[in-house]
Length: 266
Ligand code: BGN
Image (cartoon, rainbow, N blue to C red; front, side, top):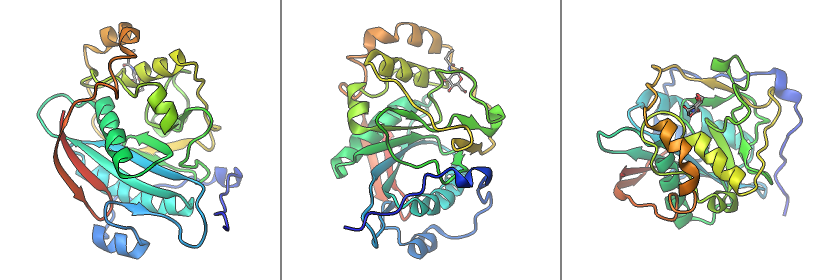
């Protein structure tokens, strides 16, 4: 009955955390030290957690970043006293990356395992730097990464809804999830923002001092050519193209020490 203490005070806001970009600890050793269950699950045992979340991470061919991210995010979530499980959804074939569809798949697989209340959809190259940026959902869909170092900690445009976002199951289902047709870089997050707007949702953000993220370096992606047309006629597909018509094949599913790994053919 003793609810977990959660600090959202802003007091730490002047203190920016950074990841260890060269972590040495083996996954199994880390999982044992932090009490993480197979599949990347953990919850506080000495108090009753407020939040039960699934973290959904689309993935392909970024092993080094995944290692850095895992080493950082587990202690981070544990300090926030969150009941969580981490899912890595890996796209198999040599086709352009489809971040949005991998999010839909992650959502669909996660709800089969547990009655998650809240979903964090995020990129593995984004490291939350402030512990007050709580990994939980609010009344409105929340854009969590509004203040990223590569944008000099500024929001590039008001409708940006990429990077890291938090939505309740109900919010995500009302939007019919993401569009499945965005292959390659760009636009899928803008389309998702339009979906939320079309359903009457306003989105929220924490202050820029709390919403700070550090982006791990990588080559800049080449934007896709189809993103403009997909965006333009997006509204015609809000009801039909999403989690309702989601089709994919699970090729492999493993409970790894730090996360649940699902390899999919999309
Ligand atoms: C935008 C991209 C987003 C991306 C942000 C931040 C598009 C659609 C055509 C205008 N949108 O330009 O997907 O998250 O930049 O990098 O490319």
